[in-house]
Image 1 (tube, rainbow, N blue to C red):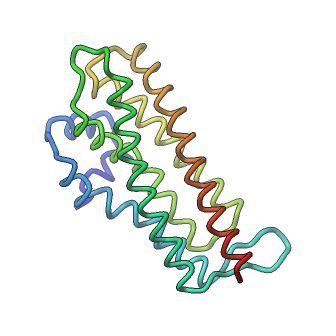
Image 2 (tube, one colour; image 1 turned 60 degrees about the vertical axis):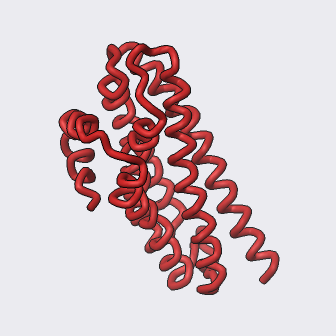
Length: 196
């Protein structure tokens, strides 16, 4: 289970080659990697928002009830899992003009592994402070971008220059998807505060 995490963090070049050679299915990648890692930010946020609350500067911390945090967590988890599939489809679409275009299945698996640093950055939500979560999110996003830039040329079997262009496009769309996810979380959070 989640056997590629350390390799993606420590030696991504070798790990991408190993992942590419495995011919993994989407269901296997989800069952052994994505479902577990996508739960990290959700579970940590649940604990952080029910036990400590979000702190917005000098004001007191705002906590959620366990039921509300659970509901928001389930919705967020589903959105994260859907975002991985969406990004896999984006990579598949961007690779349409390449001779060695990988299948949609392999693109979704690739997207799931690429998101690993973003999933791990969710650990800081155990003690939710805005500045700390933003810093961890930026670090996670930067390392995810690095995994994309290292992985795309190998994954699509193209040169680094063309890989840079596809990686940049994928990253731009990925950041947009991330912003939509964050906006939806804020809306759910705001809706709860209004209803309380």
